[in-house]
Amino acid sequence: MARRTHLTDLGTIANLDLSDLGTGNEGWLDNPNLLCALDTDSLAIANRYFLLVLEWSHASTPAAFRVKIRPNLSPIEAEYISALEWLVFDDIRVIAIGTSCGYLLIYSLGGDLIHKQLVYPAKILKLRVRGTKRDITEDTLSSEEVCVVMPGIIARFDGSEIQKVLHRWYQETQNRFWNQSSGDKGLEEHEISSSPIPYQCWNVNKYGSCVDAAVTGVMPPPLLELQQSSDRYYCAVTIGADTAISAFRLSEDRSRSFVGAILSKVVPATFSTIASFSKLVWRTQQRIKKPEPKPQPFARALPLTCLKDHPRKGEKLTLSPSGTLAAITDSLGRIMLLDTRALVVVRLWKVFYFFIDKHVPVTYLFSFFFCYQKLQGYRDASCLFVERLVNKDSREHVKNDYCLCLAIHAPRKGIVEIWQMRTGPRILTVPCQKGSKILQPTYRFGSTFSASSTTSYKPLEVFFLNGDSGQLSRLN
Image 1 (cartoon, rainbow, N blue to C red):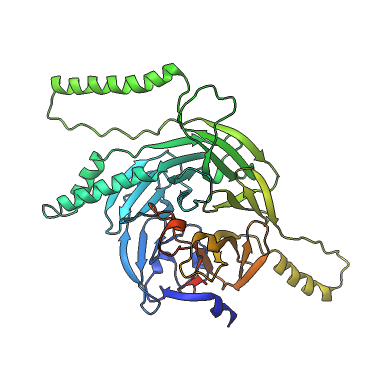
Image 2 (cartoon, rainbow, N blue to C red):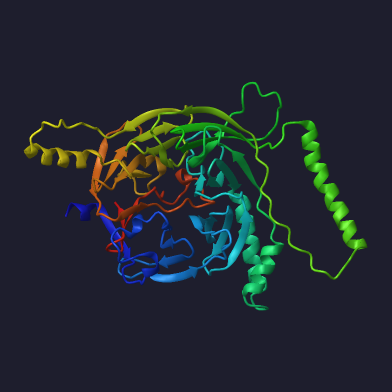
């Protein structure tokens, strides 16, 4: 009964045939090749080679298929889907896919390929969507971004640049809607004519290849920086097998020399002029072969600090909405709360270990084993930041009526713990069935400052997806 008081049922996917994803097998959601991304009323589930989008309206209505997408992946490179995320704007919802060969694919909810771009020829580990417009109490610049995480590499796309491409595509689609259908030919022509989205790319493998990373926000330039420029500097936090935590200062400049800046502007313009002139002189009917995409040169990444604690290995990284806090899980069953501005660990959740002597009677081993199962609960943990209502007096809730908390899903304990940030107590423990996964809707681009808005503030929430029952629930 306690579980029902803390959870609200939203819908179920048990009525759908998802045998291609492994449903029917116990713990099918724990498959590392299975990726999930949640929106307000939609769920995207991707296997290695295809993607399903499921939708529901309310708890009494069963879920239904929206679209099934099978990307055109390279069989020679054994390419597969390695990352998945929603991109939600005010009037547009699309799905972003990262592949094992470093391509970023953006699909519409109709299954049409909107954009395809090579970020870097490496496996995309994660697509991270974040914005700082919601945190007006923080003294930071407003920015919205999509970060692409690869082994030892971070790429950053500005949200406004992606929005321009999406608006252009939808406008072109409406113009040619009555002239031709959205077949393969139209998609191919659009893919060839579309220009790449500008982005920045940094090499952050100074302390070894990373398994997860995030751009936490804008930071000031170095104190001894001689060149005065309007370029932004970003702070990035990475985790991996060689270092538990490392931090970098990222610069937008790809070249610091004056000569390099001139060459970067003059050489492309000169080459474009020569190429255009040669086309006029040597015009031919032969089809021009499409050039192979090339990765963008790296910008400058300055290492700031690192924490090496062998054999600890970083596994997962979760950012708070403002980017000032990061929850990091490691291979030893510990969870660290990192202040990303001071680069200091401010809190630690860990597992207690004990050793059993060989002369202990057998009757005590069962009790020791039971206690050990309870105490090793933070292994394979997942973390999400959530906001809890503390001021219930006002009718229209604003951001100041909520406090930031951390939800820790401990699958070996079978519970989800809610801890108040930064150093507050554990305020709630919710039982979580085996085979469940905690999810959170992605950040919505273009959101206004919620604290000054006339509408009620929408806090961060945590959702539960149970693989065995197919039930999707929301934590109250």
